[in-house]
Length: 305
Image: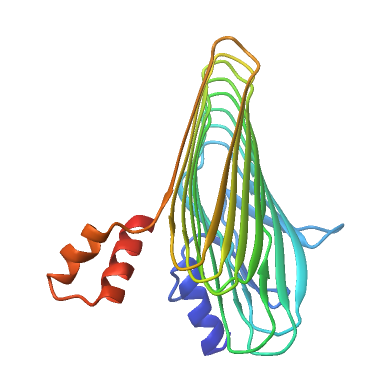
């Protein structure tokens, strides 16, 4: 990998070198590096582009890295990755995609990640999207995430898009089983004329299933964000959705709650707030010596942390 690709890998996966454990690094449409372990196997699909990640039951304190890097203008790809996670596991999965486009053609990555999480397993999934480049070609990403949680399973998703992506549609669809829990922390920042759409749909099918969907967004300049948080309570369950956004300049944010209770014992809550940065926050930081722009950036960093 060249220096640009190494720097992009640092941006999306915080890697300075090849990670310990299982990994598959994809660069410009091809696998650039791969490693498997005795408990984690990675197999190339034969029918479509993508991989199967197979994690044996009782695998704990291990990680899988599957970042994607695109540095060629005009490259477009659709990748399908399936995770089969056995029972009684406790693992961390680091994904993410970075596009550096310095040419005149659009570069695009569409990734479909499907998670099949076995009973009593715990998964932390981290996904960061990042774009850069001086060319006129756009940087496009459309991630789709499908989650199936078996009984007593738990999944924490930490997803972020904080720079340089021109257009994106981010979709998450989840089915939650008995006593299982899904937590999603999603962060989006847009500027210029960028557009970001995030749609989450969760079916709480199992008794005592839970979900907590938290979206944080900052829309600057003339950018547009749309967030849809949907929860269907199909059993005795608890669901919470929260959308908290900062609007700046001529930005536009549309937040839509969709709560559907199909069971009398379903408890569903939605909270939403959209507003500008409070003047007193800016003044307080500016009295400490920061410029107005520096104060704004400091507040945004804390908001998206």
